[in-house]
Length: 468
Image (cartoon, rainbow, N blue to C red; front, side, top):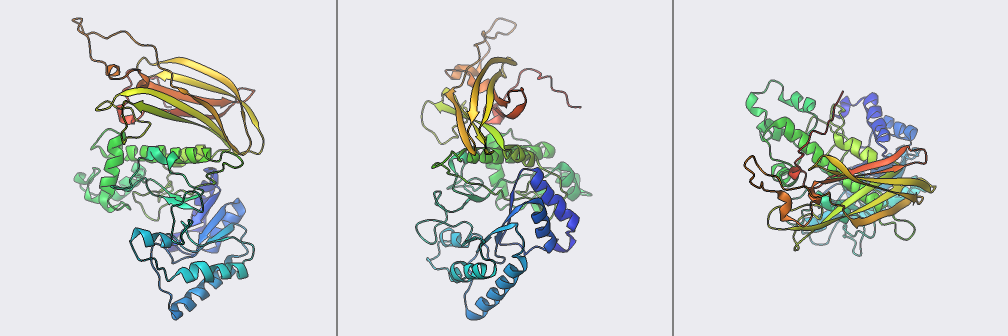
C-alpha cells in the first residue's frame, strides 16, 4: 500500500532497475504522482522517467467545464513541482485512452482529446519548456485514434497473452515489433516462498495450481485459459504446485528474453532503426500475487529479471531457429512437429547487437550438442566485427544435423521405434550454443538455443551438472 512504501524500498527497487541493465521506468497513468524520494533516487541513479499524466487510463473521460478546470489545475501543479528533476524526459497524456475507441467499438469521439492534444502539451511547454510531450501511450498512425501502426509512434504489444482471435505465440515476438514498445509482458507465479506466504495456515487442498487461494492471488483476467494455452503448448502438464510455478516462471523468462533479444536486433543501423526501445510491464507488485512483475512483493526477483538483465547488456548475441514443415500451418516457426506435420529441415540465424559506440572485433564460436548421444558433435568459429550502435548479422545457414546413430534393438533383437524416422533429419535433438570471445579469450556474450517446444525434449544422458 502507498503509505507503507519507505524510502529504502524505493531505493532497493530502483537499484534493481540499474542492476538489471534497464535505463528507463514508466510512471503509468493509472498510478499516482510519486513522492519526491522516488524522483530524487531516479535523478541520482540516472534512470529516465516516461511520465503519464495521472488519472487518465483505459477510459473515455468527460470534458465539461468544471472537470476541465480541475484537471488543468492538477496538471499545472504537478508539472511545476516536478520540473526540476532531470530524470523526467517525457510527459505523456494518457494510457490506452485512444485505444479504447477501437477496442470498445465506440464511435470515433474522445472528449478528453482536449486534454491530450491541447491542455497538457500547453502546460508542459509553458511550465517545463524543452521536455518532450507525447499525446498517449500507445499513439501513432494515419488517423488520430490509431494505436497499432508499427512504423510510427509507440505501441502496446499485447497480441501475446490474449486468448482467441488475435492471440499470438510468444515465439512470434520478433514479428511483433514496433518503433517503440512502451508496454508488453507475460505473467508468472512468484517464488514459492511468496506463494507459501498466502498459503500459510490453509488446508492442504489449496496446494494445487487451480485452488481458490491461487485464483484469489492472480491479477490476470481469464488467467486459467491463458496460462493453459501457453503452458500446454510449451511444457508438460502437471498438477504439482511447485513444478507449475517454476514452469510459469520459465515461460515468462523465455518469452520476455526473446522479445528483448529480437527487438534489439531491429536496431539495424542508419536507415534501418526499426525498434528504438521497449518497456516491460511490469517491474514490481503492490501485494503478494501472480502477475506480470519481474520482482515480487517481497523483492524476490523472478528468473525473467535475470534473463532481461543479460539481454540488455551492451553487447549480446542471439540465435533464431526456423523449422520447415512439409506444409503450411499455424504453429510457431521454431516448433518441431511430431503429429500431423513432418519436419523437413531447420536453419539458424545468428546475430550480435553492439550498443557501444565503437566497433568491437570478436571471435564467434558456435557449438552443437546432441541430446540424443550427449555429445558435442560440431564446433565452428569465425572472426567477426561488431559494428557500433547497431546489430550485425553473423550467420544464416542450415542447422547442422548430428551423425546418424545405428538402429536400437531390444534384448530379442527387435527394432525399437525411433522418433527421428518421422523427419528427414534429426535436428530436433540439437542444442546450439553461441558465444563471442575477445582477443584475450574473455567471453563477451553468450546464448543457447534449445529445440522447441520444450516439452518434447527427452535428455537420455546424465549431463553431469552439479550445483554447490
